[in-house]
Image 1 (cartoon, one colour):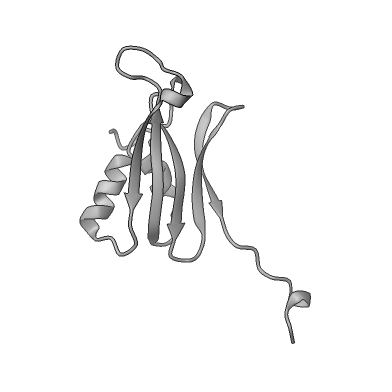
Image 2: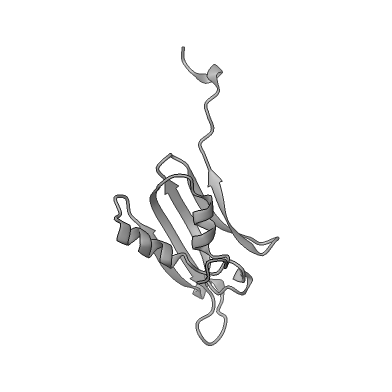
Length: 119
């Protein structure tokens, strides 16, 4: 993939601020090589990164998410799932039906208000 191309890998690497803890992703493709199939017949390919991974496993994970994000409306391989970070935050990857765009959404646990703490 080109360095400037919008891919899952490039979009993710632009956003992360700490080390990945683990990941549970998948691609769903409705193109079977000849024609488009229904959602329930989509080809699902898991992409996992286990806790305690090494550099080789991380590089393989990044290569598997290095898929184009620009033309996902045609169902050529949408990416779904969660990536957990070592700081306790996580990313979800979702397809936005309204804008026909795929994106990473970053989540953090909210701080507990002081009035809820036992003091």
